[in-house]
Image 1 (tube, rainbow, N blue to C red):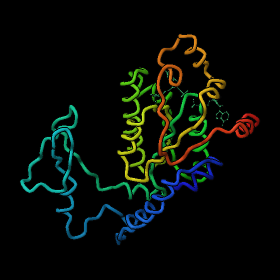
Image 2: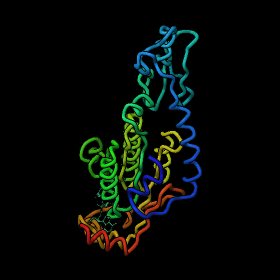
Image 3: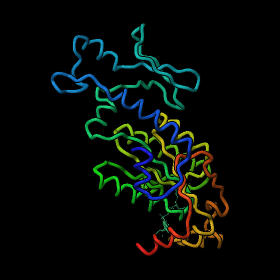
Image 4: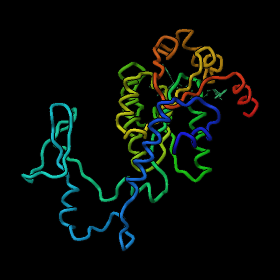
Length: 274
Ligand SMILES: Nc1ncnc2c1ncn2[C@@H]1O[C@H](COP(=O)(O)OS(=O)(=O)O)[C@@H](OP(=O)(O)O)[C@H]1O
Ligand SMILES: Nc1ncnc2c1ncn2[C@@H]1O[C@H](COP(=O)(O)OP(=O)(O)O)[C@@H](O)[C@H]1O
């Protein structure tokens, strides 16, 4: 999905010039990586002509530890499986699969990516995520919405709203979104994600150009006036502690790809259509 298609889906919005610049590079790179040489049997990625043994061995990729970081290499001259240290993990070895991301993308004729929607509670993240997913669906593109509220019902039900839990919430959603993108799916993550550092870490998980950060630039007083769940009211009454925008911080993006700016006119249009 390119930024022009995104704009068609969501209507009028501001697009950061930085994004336009690397978009063209990204598509140049894409056309190179997608020029796979066809397999005469038609089974892309399954046949290993001539070098089946070597090719198979290369799937088993030992991973080396360097302090806290991880690096991997395609062959291990000693033929040994190395231990890795990834945070608390030990003795973990990466296993490659012969079916790759490009195979999957080719199969479903689309490019996996992450569209990360950030903004205050009530700024319209979930509405935009669902409208975008619907618009993509109508165009025959497979997408999946990871909504903060929903993910907190299951995968992240153990997390609270204190800073370290929010950070962990964002980290997990970032990792899951990366898996969806790797599957070839357009993953739309919509969560407050109030911290720049954690959003940047999610961006760093993906190849350049595959993480599209969308900022719902809606003033606090507008979000508060909407208050569809009555949460701002409860936060102002002191019944919810650490509510984003009230007594917890929100760090707006400095250089996002897309910024959806609040407009009273669009708000009226929205209200007359819902
Ligand atoms: N203290 C506090 N602060 C902010 N939001 C709160 C809080 N408590 C509950 N909620 C509800 O949880 C939704 C936000 O969850 P997120 O996972 O998106 O938050 S975060 O990214 O971890 O900050 C958020 O959903 P949205 O309104 O859709 O943003 C709220 O409904
Ligand atoms: N562009 C918009 N203009 C006016 N109201 C909107 C707009 N987008 C969403 N809303 C309304 O604002 C409220 C919050 O939207 P929602 O998508 O749930 O936000 P968030 O997921 O950021 O909390 C809802 O009542 C929704 O109908």
